[in-house]
Image (cartoon, rainbow over all chains, first blue to last red; front, side):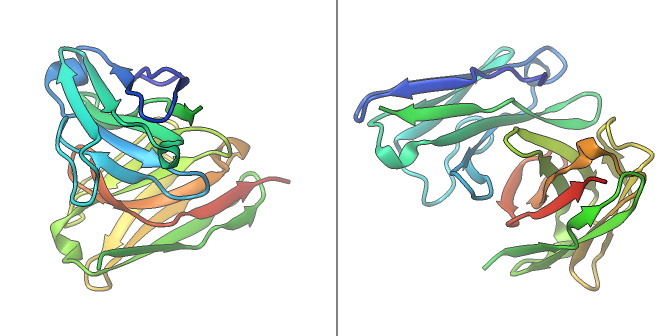
Length: 110
Length: 118
């Protein structure tokens, strides 16, 4: 069981908006550590999607956005597209000197 | 172009050892913390270890502490993971990741598969 909790799955129709939550605690997200998000397409290595809570690397569409508040963070995807179907992971750091990943969320585009 | 290429994975018996390597190119390797992250078949990402840019400090996940050792050779632009006393539950794809102190990873290798089985 991961220290950062994500829903196992979410789904949405093309064009819709979906959100993925990432819930931590006062020793990680709530302690002020940044949250990052990764997208993993089937059979490939993870790719950085959002860094430092809400910043998009070059090349990542503006449809992807991130936010953080208190002990939680969220990834939002608007204008859902078929190619967004993937696994999504949040990541932060814990005061125990460990980097942490959420358990991952499988996004299905209906 | 940043590239991270892992090697050294394979099949090993429980209790055995394996050394993973990661060849880095396209950036100043000695400027970055480096990490190993693993993913068991069909499972999620798990952070394994990190090492300071100059190799002066390292940290490990509890699940591998005392069994795995991370190291680097900045002259060779290479990262390593020495894995001893391997267990079946260490079976995973191991990724080499460029990042910062807190685990943020902006570039990932393609991964190398380690299978621990008798």
